[in-house]
Length: 395
Picture 1 (cartoon, rainbow, N blue to C red):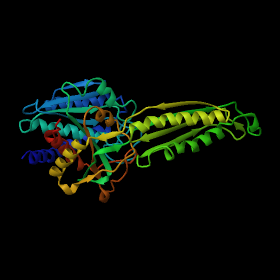
Picture 2 (picture 1 turned 45 degrees about the vertical axis):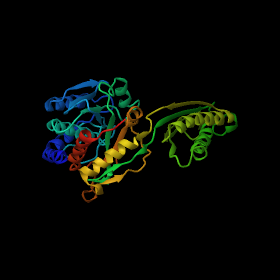
Picture 3 (picture 1 turned 120 degrees about the vertical axis):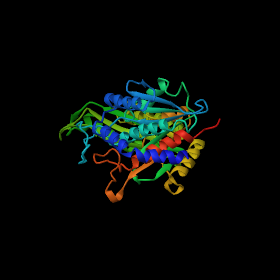
């Protein structure tokens, strides 16, 4: 059976997959600078025998045809960039690039997709259709590598009927997978607000509008955007994460800068909220005698898993790994530029368990101690290969 063959090869090549992951982990590169990572992926695909092209400078897109290649086209996606974090793990493959770390598991994602490519190439006479392997740059930074690849035609020639992506989940034990149809991750927009007025002496506040006071009122007032305007059954978050102004005890500064994030699951509400943020901020600040400059940097859209595709993929995952190992994923207010793909074609974004409490592997993503149980890598590679070889979306 194809499932047995995929599992056999995933197990057989485990040491090779782990070696690839450790190489990628040791040499992380930041968003849109993944030059050596891209070259490494190209070398791996060339060694396997899969033709590829380079898009968006560092993106790599491989194409593999099985039997009856016109029957269906499925895209599998992995991201490759790292984060500006200094690694604290004491491991032999610790990051060799100071201040840069694969703290979100993109090294694992890339490895699993390379593993799936190798498996599917060896079994290309045992499955039907075409699989497009998308190795994507820049997931961690706007405008998102997915948007750049889409502009360069990654979802055309041939056009996939569906796309599948995977993300490590350190709070999920190894051997388990999570799927969810519909809304699954939030959009993410960045807020940059400057409140300004004439500065002055701290002992004479009547002579200035006091940007510190105005900005403080604004931080509190902004919370009503979510609490009193959105549908309470539709998750949304507005957080001010930076308040910068002043430098001494006896001077009222002339300027205060705020930064924050706004997240939503509904695209209509998302842009309505942008209007409310601008309106409330401008009117409040002006009413208190100060000036305001506000910028909303529109980021990634919400991730929406096509219900039909998710049901097909979840059933396939249960067949591959056992029903007892497939769970429903939770809603997450984190963001992922996979949402761009799911706006164009049906998408399914699932979670791979990489945690192991008994071995102390529990640190979350985006932390300096994040790591994975590497025994999860063949499980991820095998699952990606299985889904690429079997799922099919009608209509």
